[in-house]
Image (cartoon, rainbow, N blue to C red; front, side):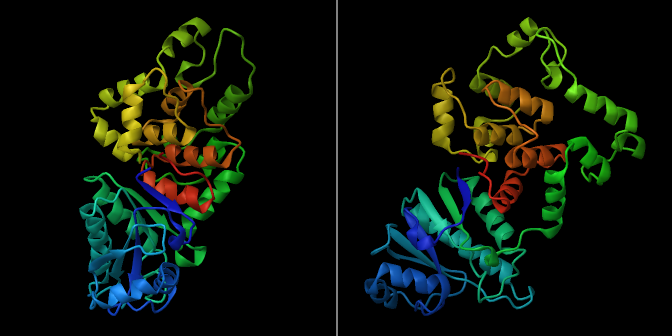
Length: 347
């Protein structure tokens, strides 16, 4: 996937370039900078001496030396001073300058730390979202594999409100019961339609628990049709159904795979071998999110690949949560999956 959040020591990343967050003197003073200098060896310090000073918001490149990475891109992050001293703009430039240098040197993969998240004091509820926002903007125009390395949970703070709500949802037995209890902000429906009535909830529970005959398949909008009719509706493999959905949504192929956090190489494979391609669940769901499919439509797309979203697994329930709330930001969903130690969307 073009952007992946990983728990990893950045000095161990096997990529074309790693980003080192340093200071004006590029001295290997502490944190990531110290770890990079130690892992790269003394030759890095000699090379850095020829490049100083490094102004805040700028980036410079050196060899990777003893690291697995071919290059090290050094950037000097801003110190947080309350938010009114241009810190966000300078932090944005740290990411953008590093990304531009990577492209200039024909890197295909790049690993970032969370710049300014340590001793420089950037608010922990901001650093991860900010990094994702800037990187995704760049990736709309460039083909590059980017990793955001999160060393431990102390370097960022996941939304406590979302964590609490998701935790409650994961503990609930029925999706509908949960959403009857919370305010679903994505709907502007009147109170009588925004909530399921008690009778409707009973109907839904009966629908999920009632036995069905061999001539009926209780799957999304196809429930109640004959098996023969249902099978005819699924005669297209995943890839061909995906292309139909892209066309019906008026999207371009590039727009779709970018929104799905899928790389160009994978999408080309899908186009070249549509009859043979079978996606992983995270890739299939990523396309459903990119296409803004509702829950029934998502289930139907997954069914074409022999997959489904259950009510039992954490990954599946998190995806259900976001779809039912009408939230289709794949990076926000991936942050939640990352927080709950689940595989991320894309490929």
